[in-house]
Structures are given as C-alpha cells and as structure tokens.
Image 1 (tube, helix red, strand yellow):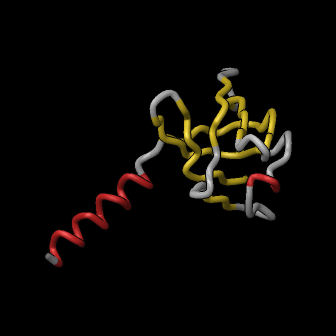
Image 2 (image 1 turned 90 degrees about the vertical axis):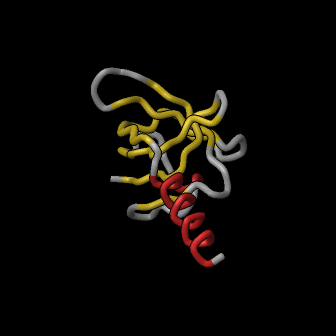
Length: 93
C-alpha cells in the first residue's frame, strides 16, 4: 500500500510539472473572470489562459492574479485541459 501511495504522489508531481512554458508579455488581466492573455516574446502568438485557485504565482510582488499587470514579462506554465489553456504557474521575470 505504501508503494502505491508513493507512485501516486510521484505521478501527481509529474503532472503538475509536466506543463508547457509560454514566455511573453501580459496583454490583459481579468481577475473576475480568471483570465490572463499573454503574447509570445518573439513571434506574436497570443494565448488566453484560464487561472484557478490551484494556479501558482512566483516572482517579485506576485501572489495572485490581481498582482499581474498589463506589460509584465512573465512565463506561464500551462496544460491543455479540454479546450482550455490552464495556467499551472505564472512566473514574473
């Protein structure tokens, strides 16, 4: 039973860290809707990410979506869940 618990814990950690990084500049923040739009540093690709209560925030002065500002240079680690790009972690550079 202990082995199963360790395996499941390892799997959950791998899922949380298994996202894709998207570096860019914040174009729009909507804390009420739980949305964050970011444009890629080079190339112009734009994604709108869903943010939930499990999304982590890291970087100077960044504790929640309310602290993210238009123009911030960030990296969003995300996973595709259905048709949504779900932000797992937002890191301010």
